[in-house]
Structure formats: structure tokens, C-alpha cells
Length: 206
Image (cartoon, rainbow, N blue to C red; front, side):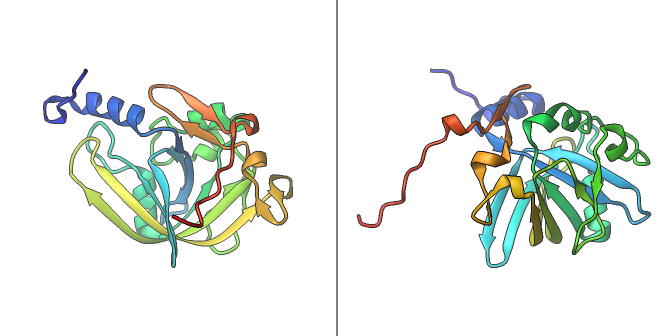
């Protein structure tokens, strides 16, 4: 048996273990905008859904290696708005470019590049290449810890969703068609391949 005492591990060792243990993880491709109107686009795989009353999503943007809060969090603090776009396999390489730590005056939409798609309820654009875009308003940002790799849990309310017709069946987004990409440990990714999916109905009796 191999055991890991997290109190004795470095930050890098903890991070490597966390991303291997909790996997696969969906990717929140978050677009945001500073108070001055400068855009930002970045992927976060510490991402999950909450309840539906209100409809809530949570992602964590960890501090950088210098202990600085990332631009995405600062933008959402300033404006309260952001969009989460689904990442497909075809978007993977360009999405990966946006994970580099660019200066604050660089818009990753231009670096990748991705096409801006105007939103309905927020001023921040979504990613046109994505089959599904979720417009959110900030509910709360919860900070856990301080310094390098500390967490900033961004909790947001879903206000509006747009999905491409080709990614839907019977009027709902279809996981067989969304081509969603998940994150694993190290540099590994996992596409949601229809042939690997299976269904299990929840029990109706004990």
C-alpha cells in the first residue's frame, strides 16, 4: 500500500495527487471582463453543478504560484458577470493556449483565437465555437486559504443558456452530441465518446 500524508507534501505534490484522484472533471471555459472592458478567457477544471433553486454552478480558480488571485476572479468580483462555455475536442488545443498566464491587458479570445458570441443577459461574450454557453451572475466568492494554490470558489447563478441545435435532442442538450471534454491528471484529457456511455435508471424501490 502506498500512503500519502498531505501535511508532509509540497504544494506541487498535493496538486498532482488531487488532479489524479478527482477525475474526470468537466472544464469550465470562463469568459469574463474587467471593469475597464478588457476581456479574459481561461479554463478551470475544478468545476461542478450545485442545486437548482437557485440554479448554481461552482468553479475554483486557484491562486497562481506567486499567491496572486487570478484575473478571472478579479474580473468577476468587479463586474459580477461571466459566461461558462463547454469545451469540445476540436477546441482543446486553442483552449490550452488560454491557460498561459498572460498580462492583464491581453485578451485570450484574440490569442487563441476564439470568436466572441454576444450574450443575452450579461455583457460578457461566450465562445461561438462552443456548443453550449451558460450566462452567470456572481452569488459569492469563497476564499479558502491564502498564498500560492489557495482556492477561490466562485459560486454563480445560471441566468441564461444557449445551445446549438446540432447539440440537442428533443429540445435539450444531448451528451451524445455535445462532444464534451474532461480533464484528468497530468496533461491528460478525456473526450465524452458516445460509445463509452451507458445508462442506469435510478431505483424506484429499495
